[in-house]
Every structure is written in structure tokens, then in C-alpha cells.
Length: 114
Length: 109
Image 1 (spheres, rainbow over the protein chains, first blue to last red):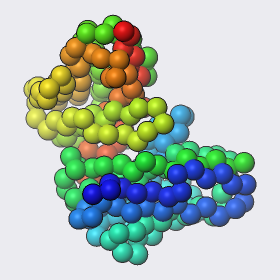
Image 2 (image 1 turned 120 degrees about the vertical axis):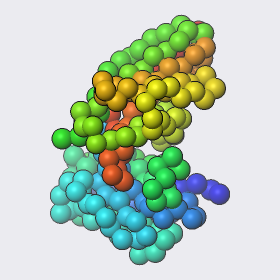
Image 3 (image 1 turned 180 degrees about the horizontal axis):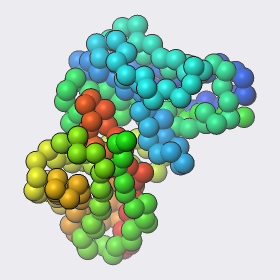
């Protein structure tokens, strides 16, 4: 298995632009997590899905952030409009539901908003 | 509020020594704890998990959990320069992991 796949790996954009981050979970994993990592706040959970359904989005910082999972093999995290404080590394991770020891992180998307 | 606390370090140990990484948690609601290793510029990778009080050993790694003291630790025996990384402690609350800020470990050859 190729593991969790994320794209793009790097994104540089200007303030106000829309940013879309993509994630393909490991085949057979039915829970997907979006995290954000910064020096100041560490690794934070933004939202997670079970069987493509959003379960907990309490970590989503603002209405500018939205996430979807239209099918078991694809999820997006969108920021619109982007702001400089959104600059961070965004990780996607997937697990077999209830089995945290199966969690694998994707390589991350390094986002810089100018 | 669920918090997981770690000393940010850096913790410096000589090659071959035992590295001891520590973590405390504020909410007894978690019964499971995980240790992740993160190399600079890379994603976190799971190295150990522990559900029960006591010790759990896997190769050079030993995880220790003391629920009464709300304390989790990771021991790395025979530390190698390749162990130099940030180690993240995480508690499982429901279906969510709450991560500590991480401890930077430097193993000097």
C-alpha cells in the first residue's frame, strides 16, 4: 500500500486566495483525520470523519475552513479566504475505526500564505 | 480541558545512554497513550502505545504508564544518533488524540 497520500506537498499563496488540500487515505481505513501543526500550537486535530461522515469538527478554527469526504478514498480541506496565520503544515491521517494503533499520517502539505 | 504536557527540551544524551522522555496528562478520561516520533520535516510515526498500567517493552523502547500519577514515559535504551527527533506523547479521548507539544531529543555520538 502506498500509505496516506496528500497533495500538494507545498503550497504558496497570497492572502485572500482559496486553498484546497487533498488526501487519499489508506485503502480499508474508514476513519480520516485532518491535523494542523505549527510551532506555536503544536499538532491540533481539526476534523475527523467516520465512514465519510464528519463526526467532530470542533477543531476547525473558523468558518473559512471546510472539509469534505465525498467517498472512502478522497477528502479535501479548503480554506477560503486564506490568511497568513493559516500558514502551517497540514497532515491527513487514517485509521481503521476504533484502532488508533493503525493510524498513519500522510507526508503533509506545507502551506505558506503571504 | 484535556491537556497533555511535555517538556520541550532539548534533551541531550550521549550515544549508548538511556533517554527518558516524560509526559503528564490532566484528564483521567484517557486510558490509552501513544508515542510518536517525528523527524524534522517529516510526519509523525507511531512507535509505541500503552493501554494498561505498568511497562510495555518493544525492542529498545519501553513505555510506562502510571494512571494514579497521570504520568506516561518513554525510555529509549542504547540511544543512537538516529533516535534524534521530536517525540510526541498523545492521549486518546474518545476517538480523538490530544497531542503534547513534543520533546526534542538529541543523541550525541
